[in-house]
Image (cartoon, rainbow, N blue to C red):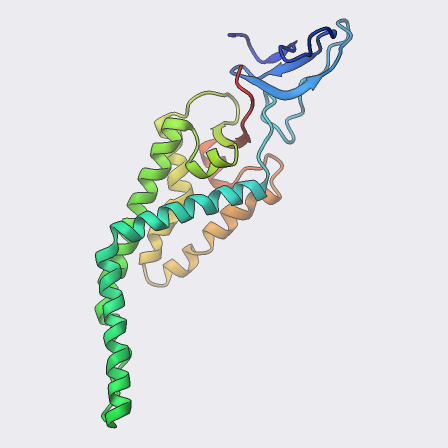
Length: 233
């Protein structure tokens, strides 16, 4: 069906009943329907307060946060596997410190300087951070381009689209979205500045709670919305 967004005869009306109307968003049927309509007084298009201009319902903060957690767990698990050599070096460094401390307590010798362990783990820590960032980039950008949604969003029935029009996301939109959401994390490697940059993910993540269009800051930068998926046409 290739028609512009609007109200059309409901293909899901029960047999034997007068057909109502259902909102077509330009790509697929939505959940917005009326059982019967006076053809001389058509219903109004859906309000854009909690939907996109063409009527797709916006995802709430809670379900978006749930999808974020699912994606974070998936990326973290993969990062732990790929970055296993870095993790092993950190574990070994702390293991050596623990054993040396126990040995010193048993023999009465000088205890090891706990600050020395940081000289051993700072490179592995940077390695883990870089692995996580690269994997997150591949995961987010790849899935948004392929499915317009990450696995976490797909599991919870969400997808990302431009606010003003449906359709696949362009590369520049996806890249703007990723940079404005995760780019500040790169500053976490910079002393002192990283502490300030650490506040941005909190502000960005909580922004949809009070935003009328339910957009996070990265949504505003990329001009996107996270919406609830619908029945296919």
